[in-house]
Length: 142
Ligand SMILES: C[S@@+](CC[C@H](N)C(=O)[O-])C[C@H]1O[C@@H](n2cnc3c(N)ncnc32)[C@H](O)[C@@H]1O
Image 1 (cartoon, rainbow, N blue to C red):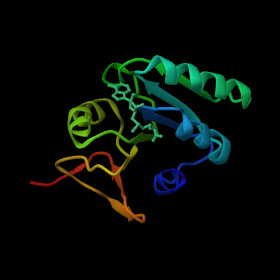
Image 2: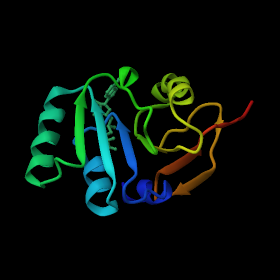
Image 3: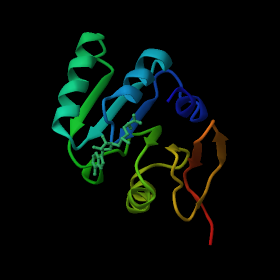
Image 4: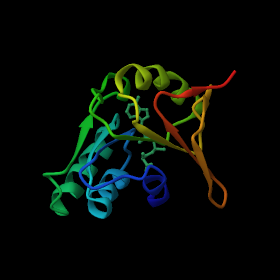
């Protein structure tokens, strides 16, 4: 998780979206350790409730929020950094949205799964997994 945020070079004051935010660990770390603002989008109501409770307990309500909904419908136009831990298929589906809605220079980090058809700007090999960093506009591969 921390490596994902380091690879993205997340800076204080920037805005991160975690698409499919699970239990909220990335958005919470982004705010606590990197001083960023962070928004999670999560389909599962139980995980959203869990994350909201955690955000409140940690006193991060001014900088972190989680939206209950489908990441494909989320408004992410103001992102500086986007994190993904989905699947190759989900990455393929979300790629056109990222290209359409995000401005040039936005950094995208995907845990484990590549963005099909995009050339990573950097990769980081962990013990058993790889992180992929992309910068918009993406470099396309055939
Ligand atoms: C592997 S978990 C990653 C959680 C978190 N990003 C992390 O790295 O710890 C993927 C999450 O994406 C959520 N998810 C899958 N499809 C989604 C969708 N279309 N919209 C919102 N959330 C989705 C799942 O419910 C799950 O919590």
